[in-house]
Image (cartoon, rainbow, N blue to C red; front, side):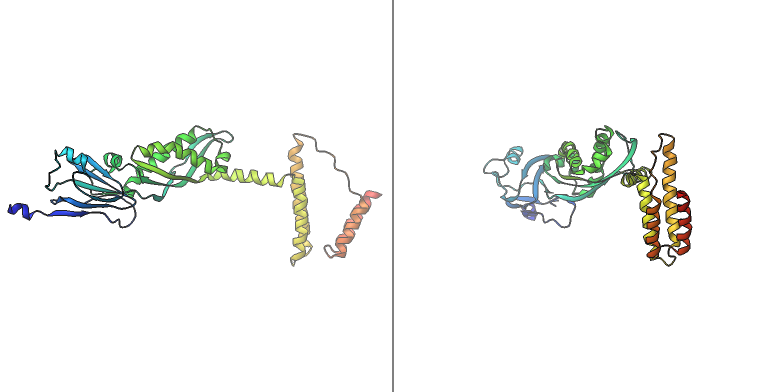
Length: 328
């Protein structure tokens, strides 16, 4: 009898979560026994699991429970209790956080080599975030946390990221989606990957709440090539580009102390670009003849430039002689 009175009984069982990232926590029973009629409090965003001799006896959702033969029917059966059994019992109680673990990062440590429809074999890097929560604590207990005193999200990170990267490598390796379409439809791509990852998370008792692909990038050398190609598309007709460069040089030269001296450089650069383009195209197709501008219109334009101070009198006279030679 004296030994019985020396025993410590537990009357209240609960868990107040402190900090982020803790997924499971075992209530410290040690040598204590749970008093019949004890109060179990499971807060919102929690679930509790009773484990007896390594076997899951009961799972409790959020609420407040008085522990007796009515609230522990499975445990009662395991211990052969009857309705009049009043003695304390000893079981392990595990609490599980069902809060959503947000802002979990994933990314490719090394590029994934894929066969793209447009660019051939390329190497991609992908990065993003995901969030998850414990959905089936009994499954999580059996496959992940076990009888440990506590289990944190950081201990699970490596496994989850490996699962994600395996799925992504498989998805990209199939080459079903071109890179440009993939990058332009990241939301749809994220949704497709989430559907394929849902079952992998479910097998561990987890629910994948969100999955986002935030970036898909190419190696630097290929990205530079695409940038150049985009620039060429924007430029379009190189002859028009050369004219634009020449006109831009005139306006800039007027603003600089060097005055019209910079105009010649701009005009020369524009002419060089146009000439280089004409030479490169000459091997493939004959250049269409360009109509010669009326010399009197040229003289009128030169006169306007002289009047506005864009060119000197000497430059005007030299150009005038050159134009008049065409008429004679």
